Image (cartoon, rainbow over all chains, first blue to last red; front, side, top):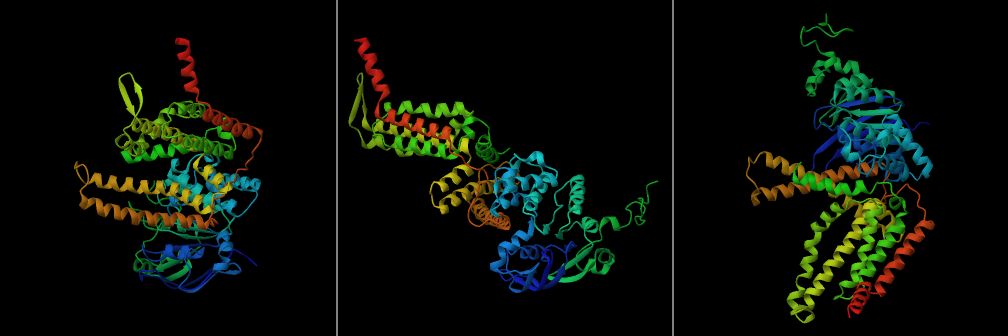
Length: 259
Length: 270
């Protein structure tokens, strides 16, 4: 028995205004797998992600998280299992201090105060920002906010992490550090992103969404080599797989034009 | 910083000063809430022509500001900001109540002016007490205590949401007005034609944003109530604080100190 498995079968969803956002999405992610969900704007990535912790209920189809089917009755368990990290950390951080924010989840889980305290400290240590504990979230930099947002979810000890565009708005170093951080997590991860270089670094498997349906699902390296597929889905190869902009050569171990 | 941003920052500032570490801030929030309630009830119990008996009550905010290391100028500015509301209520009195109540030399002062003055003094005292309460306890703390003291949860959660979304709303409004200002090339003020769609848009944008925040909250197990992690302790210090101040308020309510003082001075002069 494992809580770390996600199973989505025939998932369809239409928004109240009639827009059909998902048309029969099916996949299965197993324990410890990192799966990227990529696709153009409006392909249905975000809609798919918010289904995974039951914020939206499928119009059609089924979702299983671990041993539990997603229903109204299992919602609380599923939300504890699936940690969701939002695109805009400002939406995620709503308490007066970083400490309160990271403690929000554990307190709602009904944990005793000393356990809450231990979890908050551990989560902040893990994302390497224990010094921000007493600061108000709106005073942090973009990179710090992102780390705290991750800590708010980690403190609930989820088995699965769902991340929506984790690298947007970060400077190159903060982005690199975040990739390193996420690489160290052993959770099952579902990451939606336009940052295909990060996908190439972090995810061994990629799902390509196009107009609400899965267009391709396979090893990341294979998907990124398929030029026709990428072009049809309004995507491009990651920069690290494109030719050197100066001499046109493919990148080898060393940058090819650096002499 | 635009005017809106500044206003927002000064709103946040109340939360910032509520996180200081003084003996007053460390006091159990329940003691502070109960004392503030007692203060407000006693102030409200005075008759409508009472002014002089209210003056000793300024002792309470003065001591709190001193002990809590609170910025008096900032609190005064906040008071000025809401003073017009009190004046609006009080200013009708001199018009309707023209009966002379006291004479200073040859000038007679009508009951209306006295009661207007009383309203303003009472307003300043009670609003100051509320501001001080939040500046020493924090909004979350006050709400948590109100719930614990028996206020229905619907109200406390509502208050907290208003507090939270106020920032979301002002944030969005500031961004939109900045975007408008940058493309209006020095034309100040807004015509109704730009104002209406702007407000409509603001509503839609904040609803969207509020929905995302709510989603973040339910994702982390929010189920209708805010829980505070810190353990509360109503000890001897708290008992002393609450009982001491309440007794002082009752004493000031029953004995009109300025009047006694005035009579004593009068007696000495004669």
